[in-house]
Length: 371
Image (cartoon, rainbow, N blue to C red; front, side, top):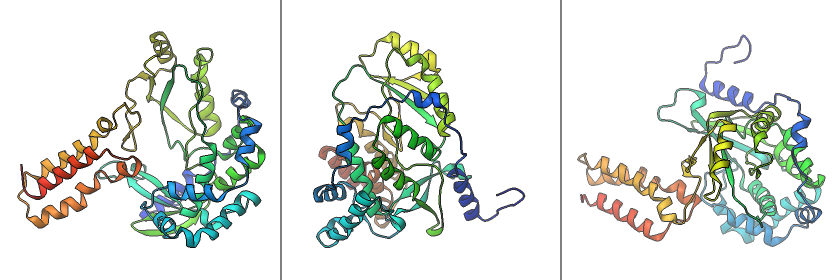
């Protein structure tokens, strides 16, 4: 895949693609972009971020995460840590304390498997696959403790604006020096910043193809988490497009404005909606759609928001009923497909009991051959 070199093996093509994707382009940072970043982190917040790690924090982080997600490079799922917590706690605490007190590198614990998920049926190219990061659970405990400390509650609220940006490899293209410069400008303590960049810079990726783990490589850009969007006001929204263009230049990301959209809270004045839509050249929508197959906005009823899962299940069941299937055939379809439909949404949200009961009833009707 390099200059003058042809790569014919699928594994080589994929590995070369992702090595290039995660390789820094060494772009310089426009000072005007950093000038737009306010120092919003108070000394009190920094003190809270850097306070001594506690036993309760570590356990809470471990118990908050899903226990049955895909196994990481070391082969251990979260349920192992959660079930045998009393046995392995001392070792996990030692790893966590070494990291927070001494900024100790996590080393092999920061090796991450990249598993490719097809974006479309019958994918034909590398771009048709989405890489999913499978991190070691020990690493996730450390990062979860940090994420919990970063959670802030919004105390004041006016009307809200959201911009849905269609970005080309949004997280994978973030330049590390840009991330570091922005966090420093926001006012984060250098000690906290060093902890964050330790997690970012010590990662190693290994691409998994057809169940076979490839060799590891070290990226020089890209992150595995997103950053929250910042609020805007009427004084600065004419400059949002310029800021987005400058942000792309500084961070290495790319925005597809044709696929991007704007959505507002109900109490946003119509004049602001119209003017901002014209300035940015984006469509205005009441529903920003889905992200990774799940709704990005929720109403008051979780049952209504998750109704699409039941409809998807019914669509599959109604299609199968047109075929003559034996009891064994129905069993295979139920276990392999029907029960897999709600797996991912259930891993993210708690489903209402009434919705679960309806889906179980529909699967049971299919099992017994009822119309």
